Length: 235
Ligand code: MN3
Image (cartoon, rainbow, N blue to C red):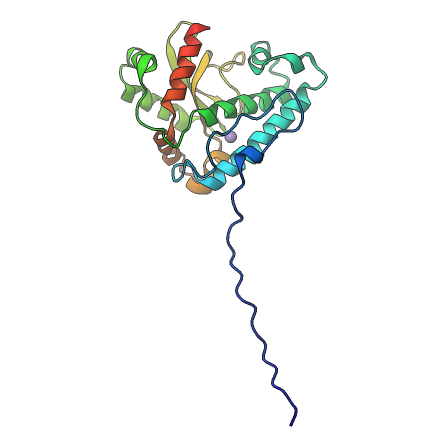
């Protein structure tokens, strides 16, 4: 007979691979006076210490978001013509749009620069000497910094800062506040910044913030921190 057996051919199993990583150089802020700092390395360059997906989300979504919202917040004001440091120096802390997004813009720009695929190790030069003088030893500094980063309740940042008295200090701030803003409890020129918002580590480390903080020390760019310190001394 002419009955034909119809055989259903199964669809080949589709790979459920994650989408390819983007290129940080393709990410641009909306038009405005503040533009995103270059990442300076690929999203996967800090793995396994900081995973590629976290870096991509953090840079292309969170950081871009702060930058775009800062540009919107300063539009049509005299802040359009100021540097971010000038804005912080006289910031009205009740201006939440500029406080949160200006902080997010500045803090992240610093954070990207303070990490490197060739990072880790210990500081050198004048910064190394100053750490030894002001904390007793590099290990004592590290313990204080890890403590500040671990104990910052909720979202925020840990800092190593050159204070107005010329001494290095460690501390933390909530949300996107930073030591250049008035009345944040830690005041001075930032030398090291560590983002301890959950968005900075949750994909890879979940609730294990201390592991993320330890990993940060594997990628910390002490050359960049040393340059921040040298520049802060000269101001
Ligand atoms: Mn962040």
